[in-house]
Image 1 (cartoon, rainbow, N blue to C red):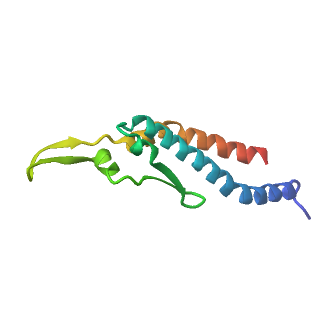
Image 2 (image 1 turned 180 degrees about the vertical axis):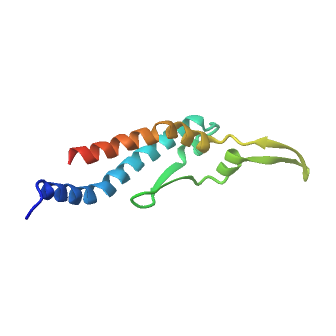
Image 3 (image 1 turned 90 degrees about the vertical axis):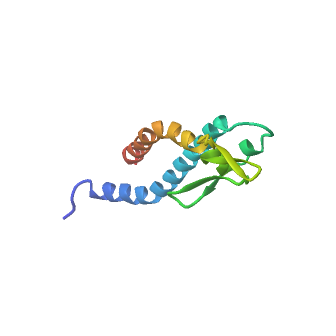
Length: 124
């Protein structure tokens, strides 16, 4: 005895099993690129090296890594001491470029993810 619609449901689940990681990876790559775009807008420019050094690396199906390999990127992101003649005379606050870029994209992230998964479930 076969339950009506069970074959189509099983086929749908098999398709979801294949498509879910691919679609998720594509979505996360898109969002990581949005974060980089927003971060570049917030990055101060002197020579342009810092702004042009933001990069993304695929860390697997469910992970994207965004980084900047300039030596002074972390000093601008987090802030640093101001030293004159071996004495600390102050502190320069961080710009939090990457943090702000992530927060700007986070506003739409979960909404877009919900739409992606809803469409993925309903279209199969």
